[in-house]
Length: 330
Image (cartoon, rainbow, N blue to C red; front, side, top):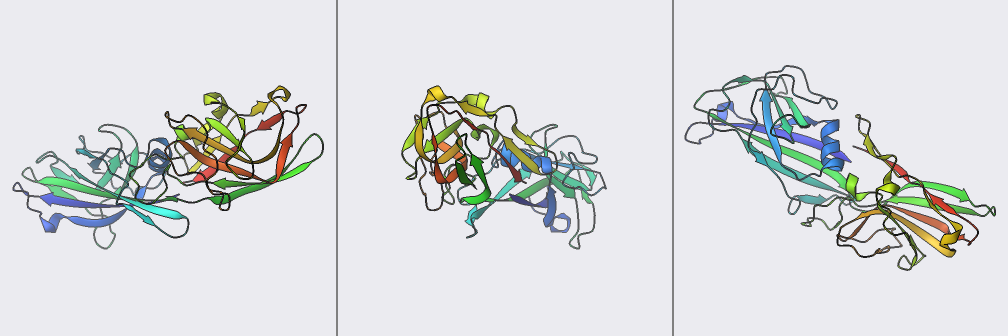
């Protein structure tokens, strides 16, 4: 999942008129590793963010966690929405472009400044994106704001995420009777509702949407072979969802064991791993078995879909154990 950022700085006089000679447009900045994790996985793309400025002179990089020398006091906040801001790239991904206009109060910032950043809090918090202030040639520069002037920061963040299923893994398992079963693992769309420009902003890839339950389905994708029930956080543990700080996010479930006493099944083709909305009453199957695609709805939100190429069986004298792990690069 990739990200890009741009910022603009507008200086207004006391009457609200833009001083073009002091303003800077569409300058590239860096989306930090911590910021990408916060937005894509931890808390969502559309939350309230605040701008900050400072006097530091060191180039910000993806591993940065703060401005070099932040000036006290941040801007007002702004959030963003999905509808109208999403473009289907035609390659299984969409790009969501989110613009936030973040004004400081008139006279709130006075002095010469050299860096700008975007945070998820009015104080402290996570540095989502930032960079040195630069001129039209990409060289570091400064901006000077007087007591009768107002600074307005515009931040634009572009997030490219999947909106289709993708084959991400293959393998083979062998049961106690020496039967072998080949399988494929498919990632799923980023959003619960994956039609472009939906108003729904819920993500399947947030920490709260992964690993609550498993669905068991036959080859038609709709017949449930076994209702695992709500496995809750016990299934998600011990690994949970973690970030290594350098752009790799690992989703790791615990191991779930289904004993011989829990019965036999034949024809098991799909296993789905998903969280769920609180209104969901039951599992919802596989909506597209040709493309291995989960339903587009606000209920069961599959993050992973496992498909056995030769359907698997379990006798009432066998146990069945499943554990899932996958990584996302941000």
